[in-house]
Every structure is written in structure tokens, then in C-alpha cells.
Length: 72
Image 1 (spheres, rainbow, N blue to C red):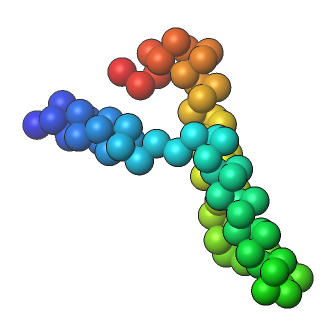
Image 2: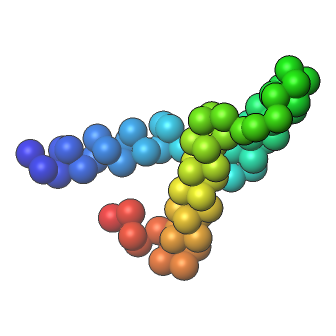
């Protein structure tokens, strides 16, 4: 039962993988939109995107350092 859940969670992680480059691009695009609208402060979307970037960077580094063994 627990193994099935682990496999399901791994599948969810894979399906929702966001690469660092994609997250940076999304953040830059959003910041540009805010600027065009005249906003002077970042919003909650920026905060979330920065967290996604940090998470993606950590995952990429863990994959590299552990040769993907941390995911097993």
C-alpha cells in the first residue's frame, strides 16, 4: 500500500516537474507584465515563482550529487 503511494507521488512529481529555466522565464515574463501595468512592487505570484525556482534548483542539484538515488 505504501509502495503504491510512493510510486504515485513519484509520478506526480515527474508530471509536474518545472525546470529552473522555465521557472526563471515565467518569473521574468510576470515581472514584465507587472511593469507594463505600472506596478512598483512584486506580488504573491513572484514569491511563489521564486520558491518554485529554489525547489527546482535544489532538486537538480540533489539529482546531480546523488545520481538520482535520493528519489528511490
